[in-house]
Length: 380
Ligand SMILES: Cc1cc2nc3c(=O)[nH]c(=O)nc-3n(C[C@H](O)[C@H](O)[C@H](O)COP(=O)(O)OP(=O)(O)OC[C@H]3O[C@@H](n4cnc5c(N)ncnc54)[C@H](O)[C@@H]3O)c2cc1C
Image (tube, rainbow, N blue to C red; front, side):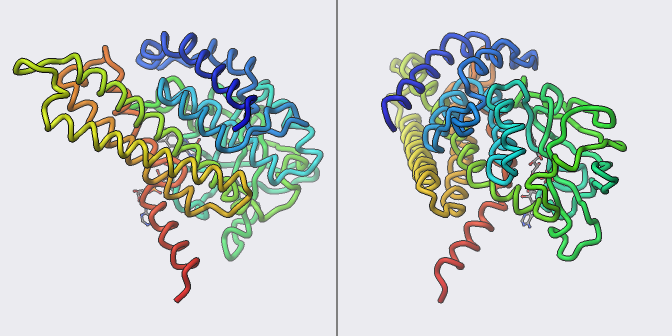
């Protein structure tokens, strides 16, 4: 991490304390999209965090990016989601797009003028992506898209999505018939419904309906059919590092709140941090946090060195997100009734953390990926 990175992280810290912390609780409870925060993030260049500088981005490595995500998530995870989902789409174009596509989209993604996310999940499938039914059939210089996507982050406030479709629904194996398009909103592409959810409020999760939507053939990522699943899965290492960093953020916030509260709340004549039962909780929470941060940082550094790190990113994602769940619950127990109150942030950590175990590959799936890699890297 150089001086430039450190001064960016300081600027992010100042931005979070001034602009996010004072409004997070109110906006989250009202489920209000944080328009002013988004404008400030645009001005800071955060929508271009990992986009190359030649396209107007900040060109950050994964380790610095993860530090930014941890900081934001420790105060309000939804704000991190607004840039994360967008950057997963941008990273896909940066990695798999043609030079013409990069020149056309990346500067607008980097400035935040064109914002969006990744549309994979459908009402009938999430983990088993090869079962998707949304289709795109070629008609001259366009493809015509029909189908429904669901749970798409930034689906309402965003302007576009990277859309996974079947260009050949009969292909065997199924992934050979899958492709990705950059789809800007227009006739035939509608955000039909905002989904109500337990936590992760403020950022919209939407159902998207495509009915005879015409997308230019020039928007087919890489201008090649049949590579869609590979293109999408190629972004998962960075995606998992980013979800792990969110887990570190929540695990840290829960610990910090609990350590503070345990010194001021008194029972039986002394602060509760002097009771051994509470000390054990705090020690376990701090150890989980430290291990999560080390795993996340190790995966991010391996990614920045250009090494294969699917297993490391999977381990970081699995451990840090389970740590977020555990720390949120322990912080609630330590706060007693106040942990259950909407006047404290603990109940939000407790509602936000479970999403991390579901998104970017469920934690059940992470274990399968880790085990497969373990066997592959250690042949008998
Ligand atoms: C708030 C929120 C935001 C989201 N944002 C997005 C987004 O922006 N874009 C997007 O495309 N999707 C998004 N999703 C969807 C998310 O990626 C999926 O929910 C996730 O991939 C799991 O898919 P599913 O819900 O269909 O569960 P399923 O795939 O139906 O899985 C159900 C259960 O079965 C388990 N399971 C499935 N297959 C196996 C297996 N082979 N072995 C063992 N266990 C298995 C799973 O781990 C899970 O426990 C979001 C979801 C939420 C809640």
